[in-house]
Image 1 (cartoon, rainbow, N blue to C red):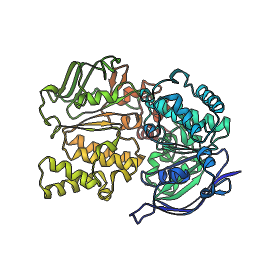
Image 2: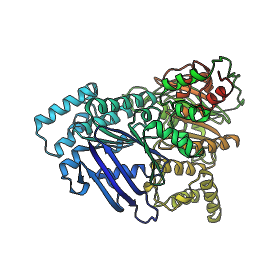
Image 3: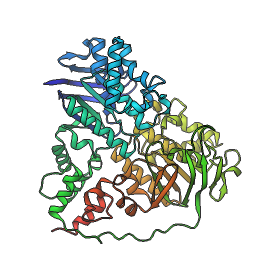
Image 4: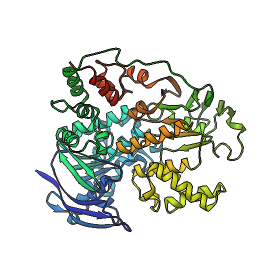
Length: 556
C-alpha cells in the first residue's frame, strides 16, 4: 500500500535561478526502506525537508506531496507532527531540553498526550533503546552516539508511520554507526516502520534498502533495487561521481567486469572473489615506514581535563607527527580525539606534559604567531568558522586582518577557491550551503592562512564520495608541497587511502600507530569493507583499488 507519493515536485531557494529539487516523481510503499544518495548539493536534504512540513525551507515550491492519499497542506497538525518523524544530521541541533527524560517526553507534551500515556511510552522506548542507564543524565553530558540515539527515541515515542533521517551517522564512529543502522533495520522489520534515509556512508545501508533513490542535480537519476542501481550506474557512465560512493563489494564487482550477480554485502563480495580468484598471501608487500627526521608535532605525556572535578580526558598522551606526514587518528566517540587537536592548536591547555610545535614549546608562541603561516585547525562543525553574510566577505575579512592588500586578497581568494572547487559558492551565505559545501568552504578559509601544519577534525563529514576524492587530491598536493597533516576521523576508508600512518585512540591515549596496510589488516572492526572482503585472499589489501589490482593478476 502506498504511504507517500510525490508528484512533479519542484523547489527553488530565494535569490537563485537553479532548482534545488527538479521535477521529482516518487512513490513509497508502506514498510519500505528507502535510501537516498547523491553528490553533496544534489538536493537530498532539501527533498527530505520538503517531506516534513514543519521543516520545509523557504522558497518557491510547486507540485504535490501526498501522505496516505492526503495532500501535505491538508494534513491536520497532530498527524503531520506525530506520524512523519525526522532525525537531523547534527544531534545537537535537535535536542531542546536539558534532561534525557524530558527530551523523550517533550514532543508528546506538545501535542497534549495524557501524562499516563507519556510515562508508558517513554518507559517503553527507554527500555527498547537501552537508555535506562543514562535516563536522568543531562543531555550535554551525552556522547555523540548517545545523543543521536536519544533523538531517534524521542521521535519514536511519537509512534510515527514514516521515519525520515538525514545522514544520522555522519558524526558517529564506525561501531556506533553500525549499531545505529542495525537499530533502524530492526525498527523497519519488526515494527513495519517506513524508513527514508539520506546517507553518504553506503556500506551498510545500501544492501538493506528495498529501493535506492540516486539524485543528480536536483533530479532522480535512478530509482530501483540496490542490485539494479549498482549495475546500471556502472553500465551507464564509467565516470559518474557516485560510482566512488557505492559499497566496496559493488565497486570491486564493477571494476572487474565479470559476468556474475552483483554482490552488495561483505559476505557476498567475499563469495564473489572466492569463485573467481586465487589466494596469495604475498600479493602486497608492506615495506618499512620512512619519515623525515624533524618532528612537526610532539605530545609528551600530556594530561588534560575540562574542569578540576571532572575525569581526565587525556591521560599521559604521547604522539609524534613528522614533518610532511599525513597522520590519521581513529577511535570511538568521546575518547578524546578532538580534545587532542584542541590541545595541539592551543585552544585547550594541558595541565601536565609538553606540547611542541615545529620544535618549539607551544607556551613560547606569542600573540598569533602559532597560527600565522604556521598552524590551522578545521573544526568538526564548519559553521563555527563563518561570521559574515557571504563566503567571499568571510575570506576577505580574515585576509584583511593579516594586513593583505585588496588586490592580493582577491588573487588569493580566487586561487584557493579554484583549488578546492568552490568558486561558484563565493556569493552565498555560509548557512545556505549544504553540509558538504560548508566543509569545503571552511577548508578553503584555513588554506588562506598558508599553514605549515593543518589539523582536520572529521574532514569528510557531510562529503559525498566524489567530494572526498577531490579532497584526497587537494590534501595530496598540500602534502607534496611539504605540509604536515593531522586528521581525526571516523572514516576508515579515507584514512586507509590517504594516510602515511594510522593510530587508534582509546581511553585518553594513543594505543598503536602503523602504516594503513598493517594497521587495518590487524583489526576486525576498525578496518575497511575492502579488507573484510579480500583478507582471506590478500590479507594486506585495504582499499578497493588494491583489491582490484590483486584480482587482475590472480584469476582462477
